[in-house]
Image: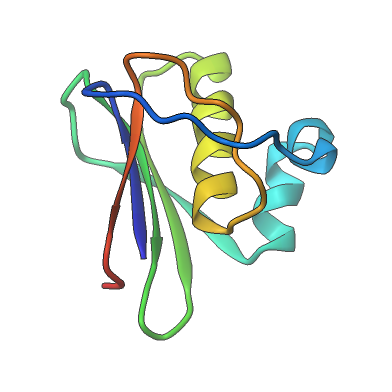
Length: 102
């Protein structure tokens, strides 16, 4: 499964678990075996992608050059969606797009 956050439309979602909001990001990644990689995508409307490969490995691909706050917030939204942990509400005009497993 792949979840991509972009700025094209709206997604409304359920409240998120407290640990997703409070735990340090590096701990969330380690706890869920997610590798953080830098994306080569430079489109300003692309915020990141969570990818779960057929072999079960997980990648969180994030663009470089974003503020720490934006990167942290986006990572948590994508992790919540990709891991089905309970999703933070994504503000308009953002949306989480989903595609089949790669």
